[in-house]
Image 1: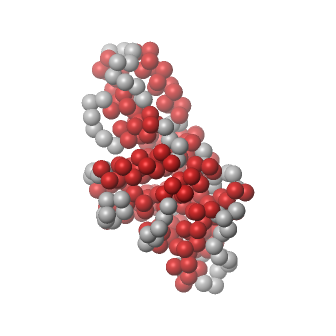
Image 2: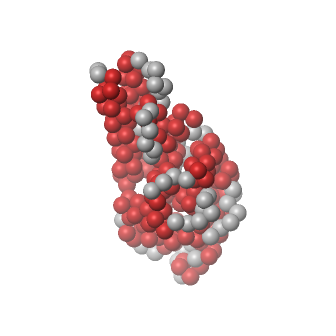
Image 3: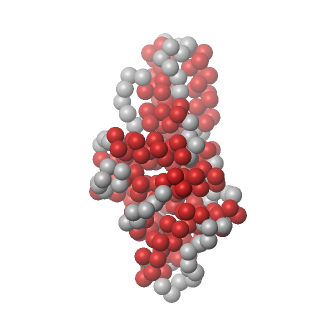
Length: 247
């Protein structure tokens, strides 16, 4: 599949608005890659409002832009983080589609004037809540790829989370999946350490429903692994508290 056919087939609402402008600049820098194909230029500001359903490609491009912001937040691009992005895309989409996506990612990363707020507000308007949670989970995975989430990276993800309309309990729940501390199990289940057994059971049922892989099934089977990882973390947190509290 040619690059232009891939990008055209993959995207819906993200072909407009501030995200569309970023894609347009990136594609302009890749003119040699799309010459002779059917791509007709930068999408208009109004287009994205006409596409309320999030396609896998909309999630994909949103992820690429946000990943580029997080990776540059500590003032450098660590090769391990770049490798993580490539590996994740290969595992989700296969080598050919991943190569297309990563080429676009590298061009996006060269742009210095990306408005985090504008990008996130477009995503918030058009993307369902479970998919936005999946974005935050993936961003923490990128930040942790070099072994540690730096303060700058965590701060940037926190800003992104706020713009995306993610609540603080949801943010802390996903964040706790990437840190080791004595109260992580409680944080993942959005509980405090004084929670009773009935509260723990209720929280587990709530979180298992919130993070169930079927919540992002509209993004395609390729995103099921990431969703299952969050689901397993919730199960592990519950089992840990069962063992600690003896129920």
